[in-house]
Image (cartoon, rainbow, N blue to C red):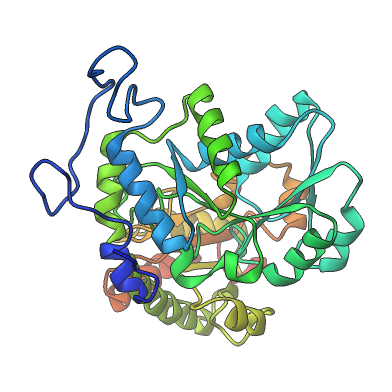
Length: 397
């Protein structure tokens, strides 16, 4: 069944999905097996070993591809497994990669601690400035890798502008679209070659799995990704694939609620006298709001802010939260609050964190689906308790 003309809520539930051939179960079965029996020597039903392929993983890939608008997608054990496999697929010693400066800390570690030792150079650039991207291109540049909105400051890169730069120089453009998913941002419509998702986050949406995916219109690249995935052993596990298939069905509906709740909380935080600034693309005060409105279909469910009391006020606020959970991930039903300088970006030099706008007082909120008024009440009491602590008040402005 073709879903090209359907709306995203329909595609999320029906897209790329087929009934199983055995019992026509409404849910695609979980093939929790390591291997498959051959009918005879050299003859099988398309599956041999779950490190290579698995019917449940294939079902997830078809569902993600339908949402991405591509012929296929490739699923991985984690988001970082997806990015790592992409790099081993595309790059070799001597190659140069341009990456967004505000990017997930794991991506930074991959380039600095692994790929750099293999002769692959990653250069971190302010990709929100196209001139800086253009200036960074070398003869050895093979890939431009952008994350937009950036983690955790939500800095936005103009995908269409960067795609034009990349195309003129015959360089591939990959977009980490984890924060928005294809529901809120369409990288391929804006000229990207590759879309990357950490399915751990909004795609699953229930904090139940870890996983990643890569989509592209280039079928030769997809097949090469599958070969390298088989070699590295980075394929998604069947049970996680099955759970993610269920979570994916409610993605558009969940994102509408995430966006509405995030905007309400961002507006409240911006009005709070103890808050120094708020990062949220849906606010008029956000420097790139116009670009966000043009490029995105929603402002997303992530809010970042800093208190006037700085690092100590942030620590005290986090420790006084009662409803919200202190956890590193994002995109689930539960609101998760993270201190990037001690978690996701802890490995970065403090001076670099400061240069990127990731201060020790920055707090990132993944706004869940609890009632926003309950979340505001929790932040209100936590901030009040924090600024009442010695050394955490507004005197540290």
